[in-house]
Length: 165
Ligand SMILES: Cc1cc2nc3c(=O)[nH]c(=O)nc-3n(C[C@H](O)[C@H](O)[C@H](O)COP(=O)(O)O)c2cc1C
Image 1 (cartoon, helix red, strand yellow):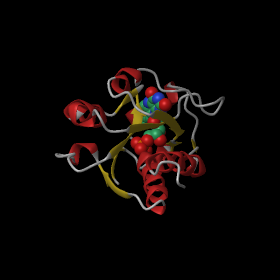
Image 2 (cartoon, protein in one colour):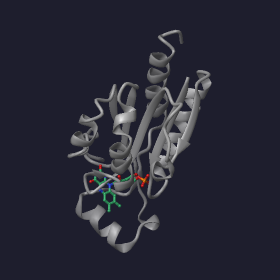
Image 3 (cartoon, rainbow, N blue to C red):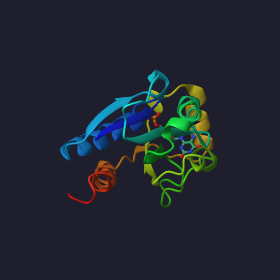
Image 4 (cartoon, rainbow, N blue to C red):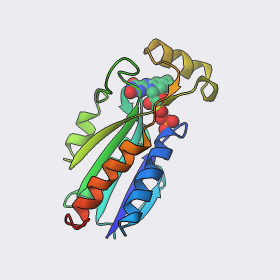
């Protein structure tokens, strides 16, 4: 069973979540390739897909959206999982699914879509990015929850190995 995990990250948080997911899947003896969506030119040979993107201005990155458009036909007929990394709703409440991601994923009919909390480190950002994030109500902090990512990957592994885990 070969899985393609695409990960679109600007400042590393989504990448780190993707690595945890890949590691957990490999523990279940699944083969996982991790790639940036814009680097993928061919998806033949993969049995399942996990698509991940950071959320900026309520959207997946253009590269992640573009991937879903380029390979929509090839993805049909294979199980697809999706995850987003963002800060919506933090730190006041639970993470809400980022607005407007729905239409992108609707076309793919994923098995599941999960939103993980990300990180807001002003030192990593340009002045413009910092200002937008603050205007959006984001509070500085690292909210990544690798246990949650591991757990989610465990459910994917169980599903792909027919519950033999
Ligand atoms: C300019 C800017 C805009 C953002 N817009 C959103 C947003 O609309 N929704 C959200 O949930 N998080 C938003 N975030 C938070 C990012 O998704 C979060 O910092 C995430 O960890 C980024 O992932 P990355 O490090 O993989 O790029 C924004 C952050 C920045 C800097």
